[in-house]
Length: 252
Image 1 (cartoon, rainbow, N blue to C red):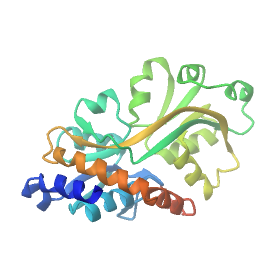
Image 2: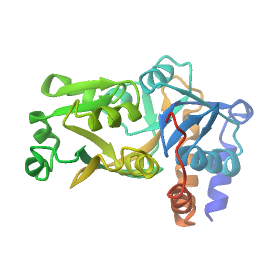
Image 3: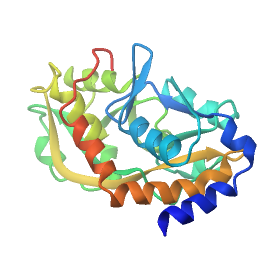
Image 4: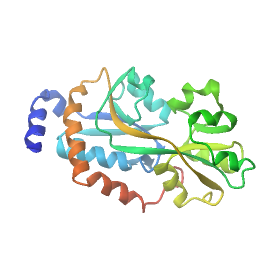
């Protein structure tokens, strides 16, 4: 029944959509979800999209990577068709997002070891409580950019730089998802200098978001069906597990 429904949805796509590649704009250093390793774009997001879009839906896909702020501009200006991210009010102004998430990020607070206000940091359970601390953040994070007037923020160009600045005690905290932190610290010299606080600030779903001006908007129903099938088959969970034993490229 599911295969029949997916086939029906695909038949509704204009032939031009099935012939031309859909172009993704990804951040170049957001491992293990996605990163650029010497020109090869890889990660959990790439693997899931390749199976859903290429194998299940028969679409050609092109992946490109940029600093995250520029990647979002590529989609906003129509130079790329889509990205995978957390839908925010700003992003929804120029994209339409899938109903099914690829995965869900748990967002936590991280600080340097022996922080003098560690007991206070242990109690943080909401974004509002971050205002009393200096936050180290990477450019392109919509949530922080929208809250910048209420927060004391030190901006970095990459995720890796946020960890290095935190370890150097240039700021008090980094707010990060569990995938990125665990993967980065697995092989990092900083792993004994940064610790994770126990609280979870939010659980944020990652969705496929397609630019409103893209001719690929009509693929979203078929994509939702494909992702639902991959989740039921355990394929997404298996892909995530594979990256639990991975290694990070030196400049990610």
